[in-house]
Length: 402
Ligand code: HEM
Image (cartoon, rainbow, N blue to C red):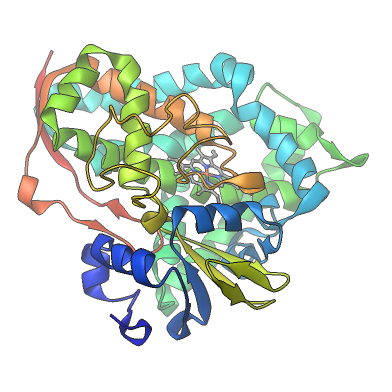
């Protein structure tokens, strides 16, 4: 296949991107893709280099994220990035995560599974996965539970906007209306939390200072808005992808059922085998030599994470889902030293990776406690789709209650 015939937007590619990823990785590891005016990287080592080399800046988020959320640390570099990231990072990992957030995660899962106890069939993607991570974020910010349904609506609007590459006017308008609604909702709450701090992430942000100056209301609002998409969509989709992978490999599901420590393996391998994020962009600040070619300064770069995660140079038999694979380091899979890239790599490595892991562990532990067996209700009707992020909209399951 020559470069001119590569189409990264075709319906066939959307249906199954992996054959084209292989062709690109093997024969065109660096090429200019005119359709997107961008240079494309696909090999594990090249994508890893781009994540870690400061010449690949995150200026792309000035047009991919800022219009919706406002300016946040996802688009910052250097010491400014570290200062803002460090306000949030300690609150959602380590001791704080285990002490303050795990009870919220467990309670949220219990509530969402309650209706599952009245029946033997459910759409896991709709009834659990699409709601769980957002409700956890509402809980960890210390917001009122009665506002959960507004958050779920805002979340859906943002996700629809991100997936709508053609910028349909109604979807765009709804997203910008949501931006106003979130601002109107949050500003009075931020004012209240400044005077009445509690033990939650929103109060932490209200008290935090950058170089002796408190974060402004707009900065806090922008960050919460980012969390709804960054922490919501990825975890939502990975929950359903992980369950789908296990249900398609019943012997691996049985192993997880009997040894719950393997939930971490199942999640890590699902992140490698079926990552939610398939494309991440960067903008070069200078000319860079990579993969035997040159990317000029000020160029857009698309890193094909989905292709990198299936690189034979990194993973043996990459098309096989195997929670016992020895070339994926599960101990490190949720930290900056991970040997997969589903959480990115380098200084912008996902700040919520540990949180996502705990959410996954609680969600699957409770689901397995609730049931003695689970199977796909419509195995021939499961559609993974999406060009930038991939997921499954419906995952119907039949189960036997314990
Ligand atoms: C399965 C779940 C998740 C996946 C696969 C995922 C994936 C990613 C990836 C690939 C990046 C890097 C983006 C880049 O380099 O351009 C990232 C960054 C980020 N993620 Fe996650 N994420 C997940 C869960 C979460 C959660 C639960 C939160 C928070 C509640 C979160 C918040 C963020 C933030 C704020 C960043 C920006 C970090 C920075 O710029 O320093 N993510 N995530």
